[in-house]
Length: 83
Image (tube, rainbow, N blue to C red; front, side, top):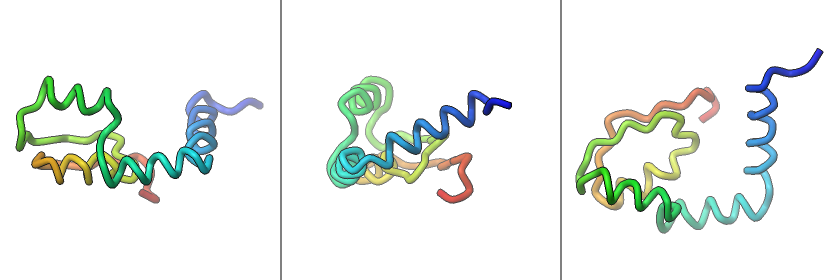
């Protein structure tokens, strides 16, 4: 019996973000900035102090950076109960 596509995707994500280089990059970005495409989206579609609903927030990397930049959070939602 094969796993569901969701389980396969979850496993791939866990493997990717368990790699030392990914952990280091995640840690660096959580202290400094968003990924370039994230920053461009927020600058284009959100005004400073805008209200954010983060679906699938995971560990909250974006939340830390956005809060420092003056955005407000309405809600953080993650499917994973461990996060």
